[in-house]
Picture 1 (cartoon, rainbow, N blue to C red):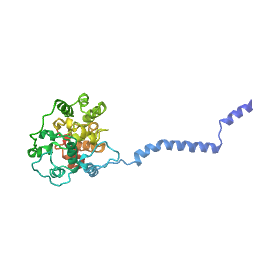
Picture 2: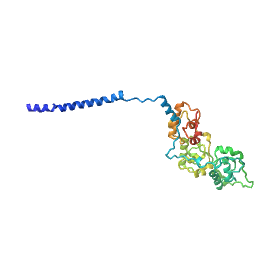
Picture 3: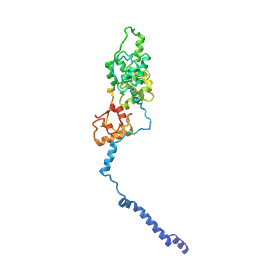
Picture 4: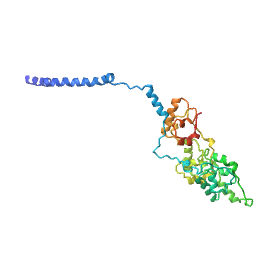
Length: 306
């Protein structure tokens, strides 16, 4: 009986070394428990930004420069490919039905743009009035306004009237469809645009806010420059129907969805607006390097301040 009691006592008694080990272990546990509180109270220093540092941070965002986006974008930079070959355009009377490539270049068109007009003529196309010339997708509204007083179209007196079949063919080809108002059903009336392309055009038009030139259709996935050349005589563009972005009310999520604005640029614009409270001119985004001059030239017609 006494042996059993002694054995039980052996389980609950500790030697001097064991007691010392337990004390050291308890000391370490207590130290670990109080160490975080001591660090927060006595050792850690709170980082505070003075006014100078804040000013430097603000100036950084004010001097933001646009960075190149490595990811491919689905936009087509027509202005780069079709830069005019002459530094100064000329104005002189011309007939778009007979003008040469050199004549069009002198008028301010690039060589490629001039070739588009000549190719259209070589396929049997003709211009019966200045308005017909304005329907060419390489003739933007500003160029047409400048050249309209100089357009002189000569119709030979010996021209025979079109027969009924020819008139029907012309009517079927030259159907003016406004790409800024047409729905998918109307767009399918254009020869060369099916249901798939019609849906893509409407969806992209919604993101863009409207088309200002027909060549913007090349930014729609799957539509080539050749396709636009084919459908150009059948469509029209009314740039006055563009729905601009109000820089003073647009949200970050809405702004970054625009095809011509990167996520980085959207953040910079929203931050800049928060600092100035109100943007008073659309040019502020380029003057403060929020958007490059090249990008601003593409999107300026899509921006507003009220």
